[in-house]
Picture (cartoon, rainbow, N blue to C red):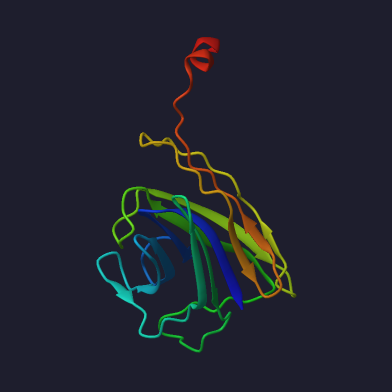
Length: 176
């Protein structure tokens, strides 16, 4: 099983995709509105996002602490749905993935932040992350995605992203 664990500010969403772009891509959307909704999505092309006929994400747990949802959900590595799910195979290098988010909507709308990353999976699905930190200029109030974990089998891939405002305090600006 693959485990996705994330801390997501209320009123936003976190998405994860297997590959890049929107052509023939398996994705998950975790919307953090009044409640958490995990949606399995398949993208034929940029104009045709489809809900996966079989939502393979199970045992979802969410807890709201302040304005942050702590979410955990699971998906089989191989779902048997060759049409709408990407099999997650061990013993692979350079697996391209991406995360995306929208800082003002929990619904399935075009993201306003996106970053790809690469992982290597050894024969036991132990994972090595290639790119793991990204700062994005966000004119909205500072947002922290504290811990995002993606785990395959017996864990494994830890992805920590921070999205925060690049606005500096007056003292920091004076130093420059």
